[in-house]
Length: 349
Ligand code: KG4
Ligand code: ZN
Image 1 (cartoon, rainbow, N blue to C red):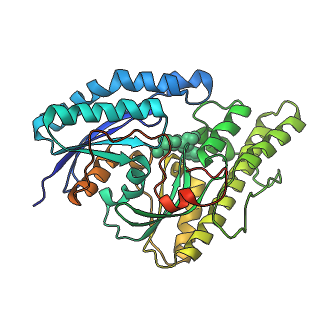
Image 2 (image 1 turned 120 degrees about the horizontal axis):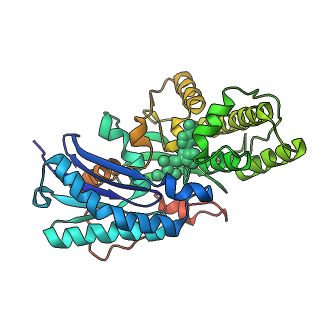
Image 3 (image 1 turned 90 degrees about the horizontal axis):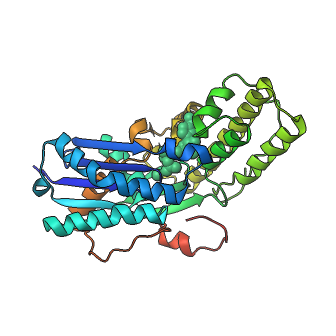
C-alpha cells in the first residue's frame, strides 16, 4: 500500500495554511488561519499586510500540524508548497519555507500551482476520473477548465476583468455590508426582489465561455447612486438583482463550456464563491439536465487550504514530478500554457 505522506503549505492570498495528507486520502492535519481581521478595515486584501501575517504564522503552524498528526519532520516524504499564482510576497513566504524544510530534511520539494490544488481537490474526497469540467470561482479566480490529468488542463474560459468573488466583495463594500462581501450579499439577497433592477448579463451568449463582472458592478453602483441613500429594502433588492445576474451569467458560461467539452465525466465547482447556495443550486440543476454528476467539494476544501496543495503535491510526487530548489515564485502562472499565449489582452491568467 502507498503510504506516502506529504506536507502542504499555502500562502498565496489571505489564508495561511499547513496540512499533512497521506496517499490513502487520510488528512492527518489541516490547519488554516484567515486574516479577515487584518484586512477588514481596508475592505479587501492588502498584499503587504498579508505577507507579514504569513511570515509570522507559517513556521509555528507547520509545528502545530506535525503535532496534530503526531509526526516528526523526518516522517514526511516530500514538501509541497504553493509557488503561485497569487500575491507575490505571500507566495515567497510559503515557497521559501518549503525550500528550507526540504533542505533541512533532505526530502524533495514540489512547487505546486495553486490553481492545480483547486483543480485536483475533488479527487482528495472522492473518486473523480479525468476528464472533468471545473468551474473555479473565488475572490481571485474565475475560470472554466477541462481537467484532463495531472498537469494537463485546457482553459476554456476566464474573466476578462474581475473575479466573481471580487464582484461580490465590491458590491458589499459599496452598499456598506461589510467584508468579506459574498456571504453578506447572499444573506441580503434572500430578502430581496431579484427582478426589481434590470442589470446586465455581461458576455451572455458569446461563443467563448469567458466572464466579465466589472460592468455588472458598475451597473449596481449606478442604480445605488440613483437611489441616493438606499434603505434596507433597496439594499436587499440590489443584492438579489446582482446575485441573479451573476447566477445567470455563470450558468450561461458553464453551459457553453459543456458544449465545448462534451466528453467530461462530471461538473465540478470549487472556490469560495461555490459556497453560494443560489449558484450551487443553479449548477446542480444544469448538471442534472446534462446527465452529469455534480460535485462540490465540502466548503473547507473549496476555500483556500493546504490539504489541496498537499494532495496536488502527492499526485505530482507519484508521477515523479518534483522540483529543484531554484523553483521560482510566480505572481502569474496559468494552468494552460496555450491559453496564456492566446490573444485577448486583459484576459487574466
Ligand atoms: O476561495 P476563497 O476563500 O479565496 C480566494 O479568493 O482564493 O474565496 C473567497 C471569495 C470572496 O470573494 C468571498 O466574498 C466569496 O469567495 N464568497 C462568496 C460566498 N462566500 C464566500 N461569494 C458569494 N456567496 C457566498 N456565499
Ligand atoms: Zn484559491
